[in-house]
Image 1 (cartoon, rainbow, N blue to C red):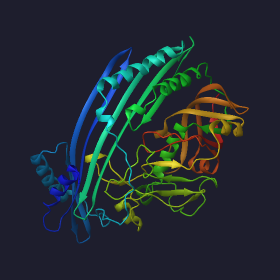
Image 2 (image 1 turned 180 degrees about the horizontal axis):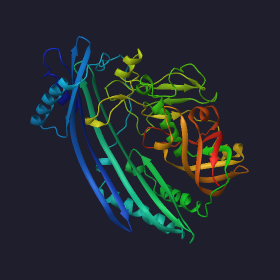
Image 3 (image 1 turned 90 degrees about the horizontal axis):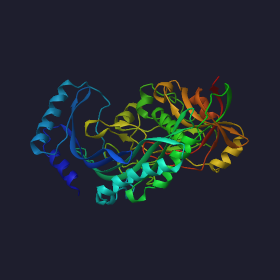
Image 4 (image 1 turned 90 degrees about the vertical axis):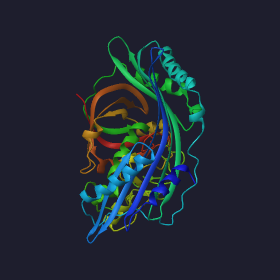
Length: 451
């Protein structure tokens, strides 16, 4: 039993009468290094520990929950936090659906998501990687005018969840990534491009890959112009596709559905996407950097198929959203650390890969637009109505090959239409930090607004 879980269980022993207590304890260390012009511009290494406590009391018409948290594991601070959570119950609204998770008999999937190398790798090595990453980009092409940022970051975290309902869960996770943004110039204009490498262990990061990617993305955008307006097939690169999947994930949250904030509401069993498209949320896939054995309520994570061969199969739920919908949790509670309360959400989205590499997919498309970056997603995409209108930069596709660069474009459609108009899903899966992996995605009949 981990020390964090032991500490959580000790708090549960202080439950009074018929009150229910849930405890979330976490501890971790993270490092950030930023290099600029061969020197370290920013360096931070921080360790943090804390605890979040929720207290539930039943009422004749429902239940009330009070919560409190503290960024310390000091005994006096914990005692004060527990009393504060108890006091906050008085101010909470009654809700007939509020409840803490109860063990549901689903076993967790064994996964090794942590490596000691995040902690044992010397800080000097992490610093040297950030500096070397910047050097590789600056020296990699004469058109590179500047490196806006070259970054190394890592994390090593552990957490435990326990409740008077019988929940007992622990997990540990580590990871590292490097990223760099290059600015290329042809004397007439500047263009930016960024590169990335992600791994569980710092030793597995690929500086050559990240630097080459930043150089390629920035230099091939030089000379970009605004194209004529048109309607065409758009190919989203893996990172742009991952952003699209994340937007879909918010609409596939049971919390959004029961509150009427999803365009998928009341559509289970309907064909909502092209016949070959399957989207799932699978935190049990250890390749995903957001993988986890347990969700934010301490229930075992599981593989949830959301769209299968184009048909909407269901949504993800935590305990409360499941009760509102008349169903049960899918092991999909997410929470924003010790200060957050659980809510239903996708943790590790991925589309089942198609049969074509990106090169083969571009050849199939023939002519269209290749999107390499998007802007305005939060303001231009509405998961309630499905409206989709974002700014993009990228390259034209001509005769199956990437051609001239384009910029200052708006692409528009609806998420409903885009799902049905998917032509091809690439086999080029890219595992990324965040809630979704990505791969090349070709979608027909998208309006492109240019000149």
